Image (cartoon, rainbow, N blue to C red):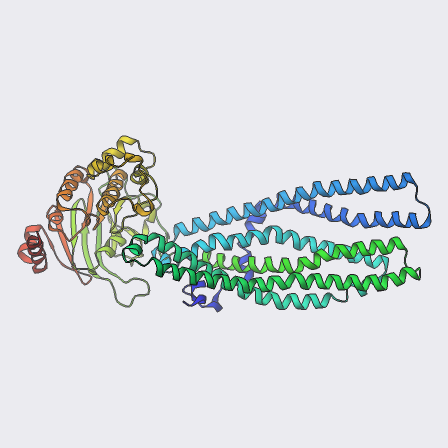
Length: 598
């Protein structure tokens, strides 16, 4: 698989957003918590100031001892000041950690909420391009990298800058020549860090992409575990997963090589500087150019510089990871749904229960995004109160027509109307609130039977849930489960049969009590006897509603007020059951075949 294409689906790598645009994603969060950040940064500066004061206290004490001016009282006072400084450092260090690291967690939560909210508004075209594993990688690994960069990374960067500038300034006051000697190895550190950081960014980018692949493979395997077992492909999936894991580990090891070099290089530079200072500074003390206390203070400041030198590598690592991940998150947030509200009426076109919606297709043509040929051609159809059946060969456009009614894809202006109003002038959510839907692929959550039925009406009572289950002819099945309505259905309803899954989905739609009901081949897994019980049970719920039933079963279609036959994206014929038997060869052949099979 092409990793670059996986990283930026639908776009070339060269078109990826730049870092400055990605950083603007964080600006509102920083403004929101500016008070917390200010208090944390002030605490950090207090800690740095106290750390810079300690060498001056040591310098004073050593010079007093060397000159013979020290007394027990002065040394006791000096010890007390050092203890007080250490206590204050501990207090303010806790404060800046609580404030700034706490901010990074708030940032993580806010950004995660924004990602989730953004995903919730995306349409089917987005999810056909972005895999679940890719999205999960953005919401886990990438988000964690951004959190670290904006927490410890930001603190370490500021701390390194403040400590470096202050320590070098104080070292210059002690002796300029010795300071220049101590800083001689610094250009080596800068050059090495720049070179290693460039490679780190490229390798971390690859690590994140391979984590996405690993996550998606694990998800799809678990979702389709029954199919995997049915075809005895467990060992094959294990080998594939192991290979993906090995690639992920190899990529991480390449990142570890860079990380492993950054710290030793920084430490080496710091130790080289310390050796130079010990040699040349010792000579200056011998020649009385600087005092012994000044030399001790200088060495202490140089020791304080070792952390900023090491932090260069660590901060660079965190920054590269954070910026790479932030760019990936920003790229996700830049995605826009093909279908969006524009100049629309926010209110629902009509309010239940008096609402009797009527949809009209007026010479509608529809082509899926990226497809070459239209799926629906010149559709002229009215779907109003009553039961409309929809049938036709596989691939004739039946499900596509249902998706357009559900407003899952955009339609051309003036081709689809709801109660005389172009759907493009109505809120997408307002139209969807009118419709209860039962699809070909049943969606059940790893929750109880009751909660799955009540998904569309979480405020309903147990009696409402039971009434819907009875109407869908699934109540008896539920009562045979160990815990009745409290039975956990498992991932995607794995503990239920196909027919039970469909009937629970139908009960959910009936409980939603909406004026439009669309059943897109949602009774295909039910046997004929149960099918008749279901139709009898829901008949009372269909009174006065706009119902569209997609099916290949004559028993289901015969109960419809009108049946529409699609073929290759066009309406082949429409009429009552008796009319189609007399006029349509396809419909007549379908009925004859089902009678023969029976």
